[in-house]
Length: 447
Image (cartoon, rainbow, N blue to C red):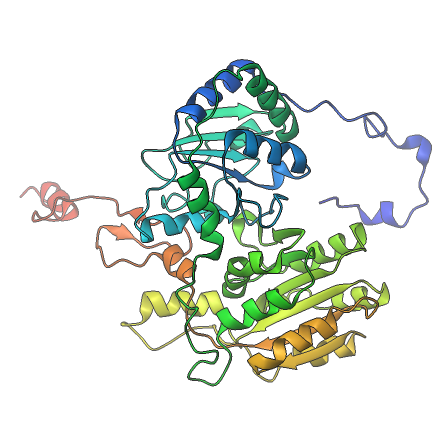
């Protein structure tokens, strides 16, 4: 963020007094990897049987080089939902969102034995320290990042490489060509399994389209939106529960690029800015701005900006009349303790589609599954300008991702930290013994 003092904003600029520093000079050259680190990487890589690459924002712009490396090494490529990669849809090495790797134990398959984090940072977008995405055992983890301070920040790393992603790919491909007499393993069974995770059926696939409360099932509603979007759109995802449903359905939309606007700390409302910037940067594509009804409220006046500039942005509000993730967390933690659900409801009378119309955008509300596709296609037409779909869904079911993030346990030795890693309770006594504070008081009293 750049903050200008008010006297500067309201005064004529004195260009001769401004120090531009290196702004007008060519940027510094990006760092390249240490050749010894590349050799060590290739040694670990060729010894593995189930390798995977996970890309993040740091790998943007590496499309052809990334695909070439994946094909030479027979390695499937997944992405952190912070920023998807450009491995072609339908390619045998496109793995989809990295969260799909969490399904391997559930289907009785072994996890990856080597992961390369290419410009992807650890944290809750990659399962935290749960071991579901990045295994906690029997897996070598290599992290490539231009910022050395990010390497090993929240997860043990077996090999850290400080490098720009493009220069890393160039150096690694060069070394692979030099070592052509030492090829990578071809594990067709692993690559086929990894790429099949995209189409692995959701546990909600056979649920009814509507929930008992009469509202749409969020899984089916969001899937229908994604399938109706024009391929090659740019998708930004905001919100809590709504964001998780959307991230799980991204591959159905075959997007050009998809981005999680909440960042690594789960900030809400950023999607409006992400969508605005994307539409200005690439007006040739539809930009899809996905929100929950909670996150949508943060900067909804940007609809006025979208309309005034005629930007091709479709905003989708997945509306369950609640702070979905907060409500879900309370249900998981307090379901057996109290019926109270504090500050978790939003108003059903708030018509986001009418708000959009007031700002000069087209607005449509949908409550029936059969009408979703028609509404999305109509709002996505070229030349129509910005629009908003108010998609009314149920509060239930709670996503599996949220259940894993809350990680509720009745273990008295653990402190539950919803949405992040639980922590062991500090010990001041041994089980079965007197409380240490009581012992300390006895000593003070002379007993």
